[in-house]
Image (cartoon, rainbow, N blue to C red):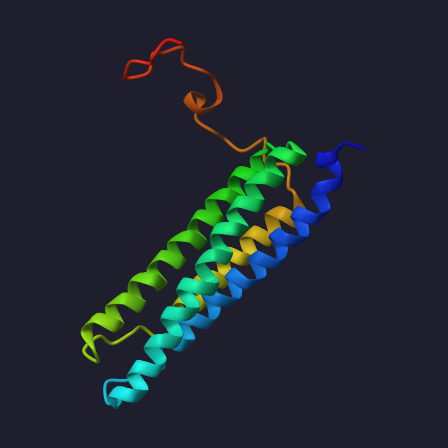
Amino acid sequence: MSWAEALTPHIKALHLGLLALWIAGLFALPQMLARHEPGMIQSEFAQIRRATHFTYVWAVTPAAVLAIVTGTMLIYLRDVFTVWLFGKLVLVAGLVAVHAWVGHTIIAVAETDGRHDPPAALMPGLVTLGLVIGVLMLVLGKPELEELPVPAWLTAPLDRQLPFDVPNR
C-alpha cells in the first residue's frame, strides 16, 4: 500500500467533516441574517452583526476553502475523472455562489445599519438544499452519464493555438 492510498481515508474523513460544517453554515447564516429587523435597538443589531460576521469569517469560509482543497486532493489521489464528477463540480460551484451571496448580504446588512432588509431564510435554504441533494445523488449514485449529448467541440481537441504566446523553456 502506497502512502497515498494510506492517506486517502483520512483526507476523505476530513473532507466530509469540513463539508458538514460548510453546509451547516450555509443553512444557519441566512437564519441568523433573518433575525435583523428594522426596529432593533443598536445593541441587538451589533450582537447579531458580530455573530454573523464571526461565523462567516472564522468558521464557514475556512471550512469551505478546506473542503474544496481536500476534495481536489481526493480527485487526484483516487484518479476520479468521470462525467458525474464534473456534474458535481458544477453543483459545488453553485454552493460557492450561495456562499458568496451570504457574505454579500452580511456586508450589506452591516453597512446599512438597519436600512437593509435581509431576505427571508427560506429561499437560500431551499437553494442550498437542492444543491446538496444534487451533490449527494451524484456522489452516492455515481450515475453513468457518458451517454449525455455533449457538443462535439467539448469532446475532441481542436488542434488550435492558444490566443497568447507561451514562453519556451
